[in-house]
Image (cartoon, rainbow, N blue to C red):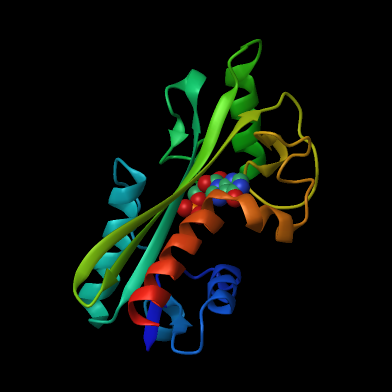
Length: 193
Ligand code: IMP
């Protein structure tokens, strides 16, 4: 069965494809000739993930899933949240995003934060949501070169290394996205694998 992952990120597609059994083939937006940017201006991660999945379903009629992720910082009332990619501006600059975040948290004691991923799946015309979170804190200076986004300043609970200091294989065992993906995979394999 073919399943669309509403993303252009080949790394994400390969990652999930490697976790599913042979009864599923995961394809990306490029494979169904959707090249335009799908809007991501909803108020919640679930809104955005559902919007993307519905957008692709309306055009293809195929089973599809989409993800959206945000970093929620308690001291900032849950910001940047759904605006994580564009926190410091439209060009989605991770360095600038981190600089802005560290500036806003300067001198603050409460540095608690979490990554949250929501995956929306449209399967046989029904909608499902899967969520993964990882709790942690924002440290004061960048550490590590691995990963992407806010990884250099995110320390997950109970760990001494940031997400940018650990190999991808280890991040994949604990990350928000991996947890949400595992729930999706569990659904697909137990219900229809
Ligand atoms: P997306 O929904 O996967 O595109 O993620 C939105 C934004 O959240 C990204 O542009 C990053 O700034 C941030 N983000 C998502 N996942 C991660 C992660 O695993 N580590 C660090 N930052 C992330």
